[in-house]
Length: 140
Image (cartoon, rainbow, N blue to C red; front, side):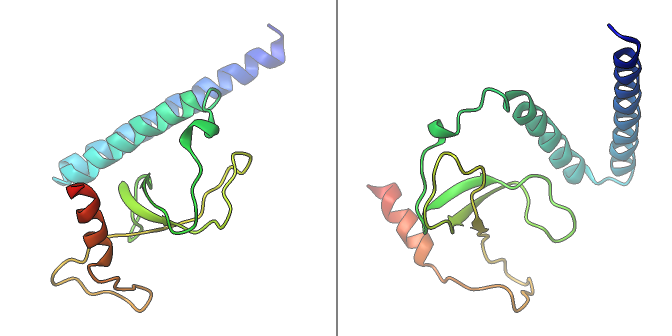
C-alpha cells in the first residue's frame, strides 16, 4: 500500500470512529430524556441504511419492477427530521414513464388522518377512497 493510501485509510477510520462516538452520544441523550421511540426509530433507520449501502453494488433495479403514474407503493422514507414523514408509508407514483435506467422515482407520500391534529394548507384530504380500494383488494 502506498503512503498516500495509508494516510487516506487512517483518515477514514478516524472519521468513522468520530461519527460512531457522536451517534452514541445522541442515542444516550435521547435515552436519558426518555425519548425511547425516537432512539428506536433512529436505530432501525441506521440498520436499514447500512443494509442498503452494503447492497448498493449488487442491487438490480430491474427486479424491483416498473411503476405507472398513480400506482400506490410502499416506500421506506428514512428517518424523519422535524415534520418530515419518515418510515414506511404508502406513496402514489408520479412518474409518467418509469424505466430501469432512471435511478429516481417521484412519489407523493400518504398518511392517515389523525383526530385532533391540525393540518396545513398543503394537505389534501383524499377521503376514504384509497382505503376502500385497498379493502376491496384485501377481500379478494
